[in-house]
Image (cartoon, rainbow, N blue to C red; front, side, top):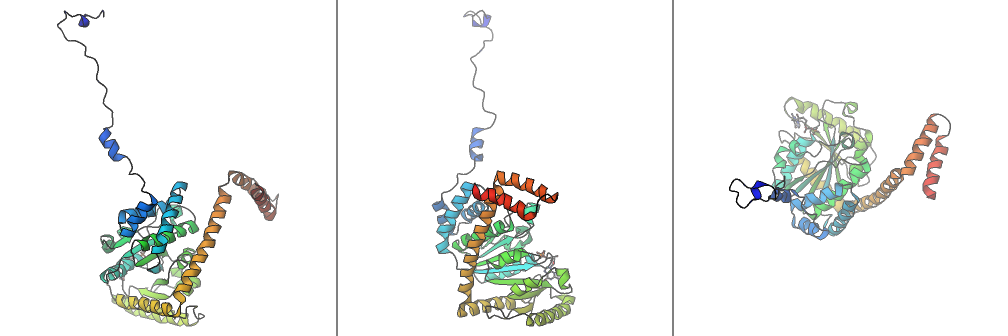
Length: 362
Ligand code: GDP
């Protein structure tokens, strides 16, 4: 009251009662930035069955998430999609880096779309765990497909063990099939264990090779060749046609030494050029003939049901291992026992028993 400004006679500048300080962040923008609410399982399933790519992508993200509540929601969505799945051709594609996987998937994919199909390209990259990101299944590597509305391209899930990554890809197959994708490509690098995982989720396994590189150079193990339903020699163009045909003859004779396949199908060896789009129809014709063959003799169904059983046990193994290694006391005991083993104070077996005994009794 002593302030002259508060005197009624005062005619100079007065102090007004304050106005609230506006928030630093525009509330309208903040509201817009807030994350979209998570759809319910039924909303996701309805979206997927409608073929809504946004809903499919969100469901795949849930499948890939490591958050426990996401896991439960993802499982519910998968289970509801399961009756609508299974109606696709699942094709595994492998080959060393540089063999032309992305170029070929781009070309084969466009061939599928031209025939009126819908294609999903998924990937399993065992290295992505280390590199925290995967180039396999990357859109930028499939320039033509990436802009096609009928193609859904998804890079390899990157978190977790190979088994975990592979399970996520397998679950994504179910979602894609429910969304109406009738051809599924699963890409992987032909260097190791990931082939077994891919083999356990596809109907047809295509091995991409290039001429002029020895088997050692291509890192292709005999086991991978044995898994192949078709071997295709890429880059059969220009000066490379001769070497590609030579490689074709070599692979053909190598395959003769293998025991007959369980499916009764004789794996074929073809040459083609993914880049110049030569021989694509022939490769596709081989795949068509394979599906006709195994559907007629019942192997198609047999293989799928075996795969389902395999995944049941694989998932149990994975979950058991995770439950064990995630236990903090187990982690402490492991470190202590490992140190003892390294210092030659305890045998490996005794150390393992030590930790397992704790685990089984708590
Ligand atoms: P990826 O690592 O297996 O995915 O192989 P890419 O598809 O990236 O191909 C590796 C390199 O081979 C690229 O430079 C391609 O342009 C080239 N390439 C792929 N397919 C062919 C082909 O059919 N003919 C020729 N000449 N080059 C090809």
